[in-house]
Length: 310
Ligand SMILES: *[C@@H]1O[C@H](CO)[C@@H](O)[C@H](O)[C@H]1NC(C)=O
Ligand SMILES: *[C@@H]1O[C@H](CO)[C@@H](O)[C@H](O)[C@H]1NC(C)=O
Ligand SMILES: *[C@@H]1O[C@H](CO)[C@@H](O)[C@H](O)[C@H]1NC(C)=O
Ligand SMILES: *[C@@H]1O[C@H](CO)[C@@H](O)[C@H](O)[C@H]1NC(C)=O
Ligand SMILES: *[C@@H]1O[C@H](CO)[C@@H](O)[C@H](O)[C@H]1NC(C)=O
Ligand SMILES: *[C@@H]1O[C@H](CO)[C@@H](O)[C@H](O)[C@H]1NC(C)=O
Ligand SMILES: *[C@@H]1O[C@H](CO)[C@@H](O)[C@H](O)[C@H]1NC(C)=O
Image 1 (spheres, rainbow, N blue to C red):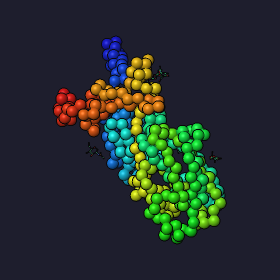
Image 2 (cartoon, rainbow, N blue to C red):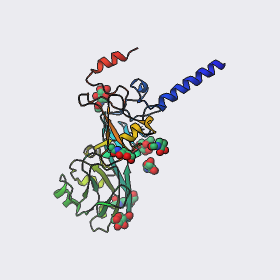
Image 3 (tube, rainbow, N blue to C red):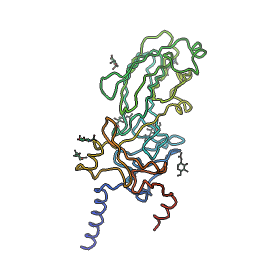
């Protein structure tokens, strides 16, 4: 009995030691983990389920839709994940308005742990009538931009504007630079002469890194439709933000949390908290610097698979 207890203690201690040392997990450690959600493949440090993600990188697969959708937090839908540290994701707000009432609406975005930042300049697109939109950097009061959208006669808008870029009639855009990890915006509705027919419509706001083409149908629908959403995603870069930078992660008291595996390189985030890990340039696209032996450095994947067999 004593011996069994001792053995159990040892096993527990070893498991804890493994975690405490913060050694990145191996592909083998993640064998039990879901590898995809709908059409989207999942790559560590992201993951679903116990032991499948680095703390702070838990994803949710929402299976109520067909195909299922992969969410990080509740406003960021991941549509593609690159092992070398980027995700393609969409950030969409469907804001139901109250018929007959002029409302004001405030919304904000940040990924859990602020680990995602916009990769390039993109824009916040707002589809709606009779609205003023103010966009702020982070959660501060620093104004990033402003835009206004008015509507004219529906038939006229349909004829003159559908299929054209946003220009302040039916929709407007505010530029958002790269490197942004959080923002908030507020929308105020104004009295409008032509928006009567749109009394029950939804205001839609989303980030986009490509040109958005206005369509009057979007004004009348409750959600941005599936076709449109395809054009409303953008690249985000991924960072580990539980430490200030590479040196604090490597040398600090908390170096046990260091995320970069053997053979990978630590890269500081420019002017921001955190770091990321990269495999050498000659590695494969699907190499993963956050996994033990994840940077294969030119060794064919098949060889690795054979070598790991017991
Ligand atoms: C997801 O992974 C599977 C198996 O590795 C691969 O066949 C498929 O092409 C991947 N899908 C995408 C969208 O990358
Ligand atoms: C999944 O999506 C549905 C429909 O959009 C939503 O009602 C539900 O709350 C979501 N579930 C989770 C776990 O996010
Ligand atoms: C979205 O997530 C934030 C932070 O996790 C939470 O405070 C908020 O209530 C969530 N909103 C919804 C609609 O679930
Ligand atoms: C939105 O922001 C603008 C600019 O700072 C401000 O004047 C306005 O009161 C804000 N509206 C709401 C509803 O917070
Ligand atoms: C708005 O919705 C209400 C209740 O759903 C409905 O009675 C009314 O006809 C709608 N108005 C318009 C302009 O669609
Ligand atoms: C990392 O952060 C520490 C603590 O703030 C700072 O002393 C050090 O200069 C930083 N290193 C780099 C390369 O920015
Ligand atoms: C180490 O991590 C703990 C918990 O995550 C945190 O409270 C503490 O400030 C960290 N210390 C350093 C030196 O970063």
